[in-house]
Length: 55
Length: 62
Length: 216
Image (cartoon, rainbow over all chains, first blue to last red; front, side, top):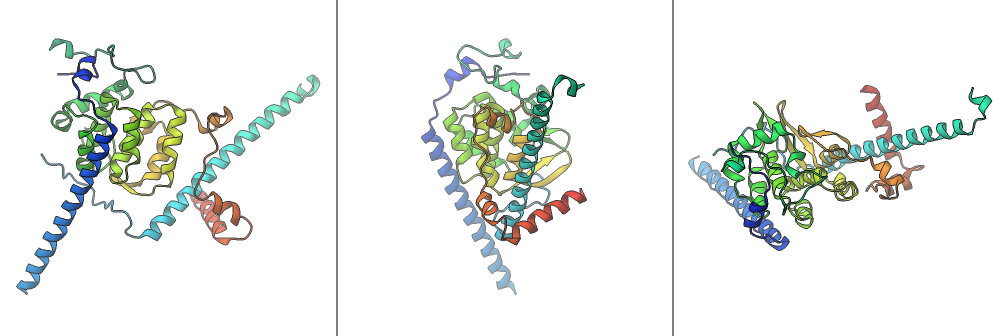
């Protein structure tokens, strides 16, 4: 069982993340989630159209 | 990996009924303000009692 | 990797919070369950301040400590990761105040409650008493709805939130008496002050409150 707690070694190995990196990442994730939301909506619309077409 | 565990059929979408959501918050906030005021009153009462006792003369205290 | 098999405490180049290794701010029992959890092993491995945003945005659908058969939530796993990472205060505030992901805000809020100095806990978290976004909360009792303001209120007045024991927080009133904090401001202050004699809405609300109290 590994109990890897914060250690000097792991801290050194880590890349330095800046606040700008974090901001950019959050903006990117936000856009990504909006696109996914849009896709879901689209798929749903297509499904609905197919259903309507069947009728 | 399945992260789509059971969410208990609870919808966490905001703004479905803005007025209801605002009013529910307003009531919660009033409760908090009320609670804070009551705590303050209680603390002041306790302080008053301490001051009163401190100002008593030796005989009065007994 | 024998040196990794025990809790080695703190090393030279890392910092303590509240005089202890940050990870021990979480109870041992939950910590151990988290380290045994598949989610933690697979998705929190080599996580950093940037990739933790991905996890919080994509995986966290509810707050909470553990649920079901004492399985830790992704929320608790990420909280543990944060304790391990111990990000700079600026980055934590960015998590808290970003507008897009409410579960990331909630994660930052509990992390701040556990690790920041008391005055900052109040000044950073109290603005969220006006935030009424919805959150799911999962526990052994099931899943419920909670609002951000309720969650933050619990963080400020309770000793245990999300099944996580919180370090003692001095009372707000004590910090006010020490002149370290100004009295809390509420968005409703103006409304309450100006309407005290005339408006009926507040009387309604207050009598509503009283009624509710009597019922309880």
